Length: 236
Image (tube, rainbow, N blue to C red; front, side):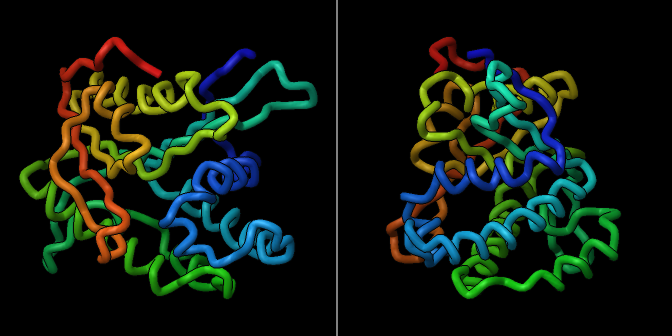
């Protein structure tokens, strides 16, 4: 197997969405957001029809760096084994006090209008999804208010379960941290329990925790890596 990290293109989005589903389908948060049974073929099809174009819109955001880990030895093309979506963005506050992701400068209004036309399927808990996205914005505002300039934000990362433990996640993280080190910029993310040790080995430090569902059953760890903080040698 020859694993290579390459830029993701719109043609890769169906495979990325499939990889994301496989990586998190047994997780508590995904089960709360996506209310479909594992054998619900029609429900999964509708979910894909919503998530693929939505992901493509995320790729259109200025400063987006979407990357994938692929097996170059696969016949008839590339197989996506993992993915990451990094955003290089300005840390700023507008008049209302908002900051960070969700208020991207210069984002095309036409794309925003296009987003509103996507019909959320019934299998998605739209209210919960909107609440989580709003929480993410407020969390970045809370933890990044002491910084200025630009930052790299890891918005998404997942690896096919069958290929975990082969260093794929570390390679996807390192893509962004290599960029931040060269540019002397901080890197920020919100980690699940499963990813925490990977990020610690890459030099991230814990800033705090967020109770995502409000009932103590699912927490994210807020993490930040400032430039020149070297990763540990024991990587996976």
